[in-house]
Image (tube, rainbow, N blue to C red):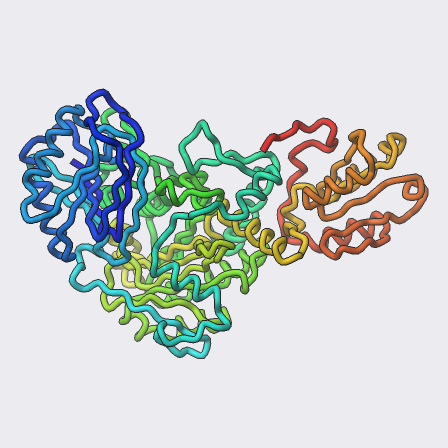
Length: 616
């Protein structure tokens, strides 16, 4: 039996329809329960009455620790691929209900498709998972649960002058987004009540859309979106390799019963994609961590090789996020994550590398068009680490130049002692992490990664976990949300020039000027500029309006005057001005603005008349 147990403020569910013949007969009424523990239960092939009794005893004991006596048993087949027959499953659930002495027990109907809403409490014991068998019992839980009596978060605001403020007393008047982030972290409500503005924009600009034939949270990217995604991937990868990363590639699926994987797999069993193949129970990776750690374990390392920086752009990592959290490009079940781990010989080297990666991450975001004012920083650490390393933490906040949200723990119960992330707060007040880095003091030992120190003795490295940009799709979400904000505040939305699917649109006044447009387009393409031609049978006014709708940065109308002149009249969407430049000066200005950024050819063909109509 597999159980996901959640301590909730409330749960609401509505039976929708019978899913199987043996579904219970009932009147499909909605139900709301408050201050309750919800146990999502998957009954497996070998489960019996003994398992039912063990399971309800385990649930009861954990409920005593959090002071809750109300329980909802919720049949949930998605936790396992080895399910019992419906008849057995229902009997086991009924046995659990019968043996739940001292509890107020409710049970959601068996065999029905149900819609539900749920709000999980924000304390460390609110979530845990269990695997119960007839013989040996396993409880899969996070390190936080093992340290349950010691866990408590203390929230503060740290200002650039090094002062730590109680969050309740801090004046957020000049830091409204930081206040939104603080409230978001406290509430831990990840679901959305309405689509954020970027969803409409990603469809309108033919960038991406939902794929109805796939699992939710797996997107389709149209040519414009694929081009933008590729450019961001190349840019981030180039920056990491300039920093010194070694690019590798690791598998996307792993054996859940491999000794190094069991704790990872059982930690969040409801969030994995599972595959049974040739007697193995495999899961799709949710990060590049374990692939890179297993690789590093097989390296012969000396302290002279450190820091060793392994990097992978994972296309894809997978995580079965809850359906209410899935919206547009903000939170996905399949995502592209740049992931760079540095194996360091000691804490001093780790801290020095940590500084470099903080600067790298800020530089990467700036190059992507995400400025310092666009994000808020959260930093998390143990009290001991903070007291011993105040200069490091204060240095990071000072570089940022504005207050940050602090989460402090009295005791360490994660694998890291320090973690920061940059969070973008969108138009609906939701915060989404972009760049992040962590100082990991456990996994070097857990994965048996060794290096020989200067005394020729084996040691385990300290590992840094850095994503300099966060998920590529989330970068695109951020750029679109920024554009939506510009639009709302009366500014013309625009992409950074190097990311624009089309940088220059040429519009001939008459068909006889097409040849001249082709020659100009050839020259622009030769100089790594994406140019297309509106050769459709449309009026010039209509062509200009369409180019504006597509956020084309530069529009050049070609008529007889332009054909016979050495200069071009160029409409600039960014400056809202027209300028007269020679083709060479125009090319030089674009090269200057896109310097240091990757280039790819246009991904939809040059002629608009030959492009398919994308219905979005």
